Length: 258
Length: 283
Image 1: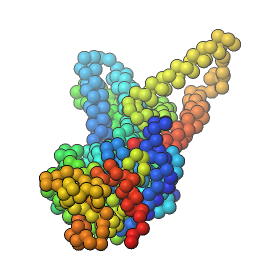
Image 2: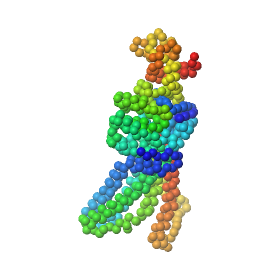
Image 3: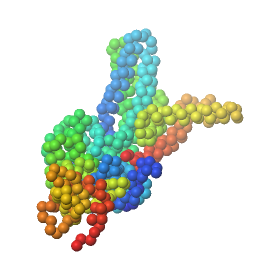
Image 4: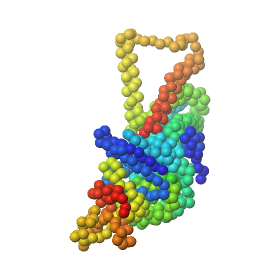
């Protein structure tokens, strides 16, 4: 059996082993989740096709894909919030906390599984779903083959970026809270957003409505405005992501379990 | 190896569990960490492996503070908690996932323990009985071959033959460069396999002596009710008292048999008196 180096610096070999560990320990949850989501969405598509065969097929496919991206995000947050579940009980915490690896390696393995690998498998699952819808549409309902690239490309960057940011927040919730990690994190986000709305409303009442024009949409074509929107999203999403990953790292380092 | 200096710790403010606790654990010893329920045995083990941080003082393993939880320090230590929940993977998977983190992991030792305990490593660990899970984890802990091994109530949940197998395996270990700490309140079960008695009481180590020193200082014998004046502690039994008395040169060689339960009760009941006995100059 190959033994890992035991240096105090970040080790790629240990990271790889942790990644493998995280995947094996969550494989059942992931297989059930992906299988269930694809099967559920495909059934939903079939039901829509059977009960309303005359409607535009493309519209139905867009509804299913929108549902798929929503499931991708919500299931992803639930998954991220549970990735450090070992820390939540004293019966499992010792296995995780005393595993010879740094907090950075443990966090990066969790992030890679919950963001990179989860997103790649989700996108692959959505593509398989689209292929299934296309093939079944052609075979049983005589519809056209659905153009995959034009459908999956829409807002994908924004969705992935949005998920990147909130995934980091839910990872922090996974370390910070000791119970009901997903619910408590979601509630905290809602509370934060609600307080922003209240503050904005109070500012508007005091000083009149605030309008910020970052660019004039009329001067740009749709591709340019989408790109600029993406850049603006990147400007706030990246710092928030990094902040929450840093906080998660600190919390793993300082987590005590009696 | 493990050095605890002036450790103070409290779960709740104003209710300290440890106050200026100091302890040195050296390689080549199997320490029996004893104490009443709630004395803080598990908490002390948690400090040793960095799962809890001291409020004051420090706990180091080979000079590295335990609370840093550095890979080097953690790879030299394995803790088997009293209560644990294993992942839903098979035993073989568990070994594949965790063994590479322990540089001295001994696969032959693992196979040997697994076959002695008759644990099926192809089964999903969560589907095994608690006793089987415990035997699997004991095997992994021993095979990890770490210089420091912390076992919290290792025989809880084991059947009688398994307890005996556990004792035999530990007795066969070469621990000349290892320090094994067995925390337990089952003094009778494990008393025979330790060579250092460490007792926690009222947030401090009140007793930490080797069996050799105990044999030099104390005699364990059965006495009549009229002989109690010469003894430190006694418990009534059929036809007299099981007693602990200061050792004298006229004691027979077989009086070296240590009654661990009696010793433990004596230290809990007559702490100061026993401490004084061990602080005396030997004549």
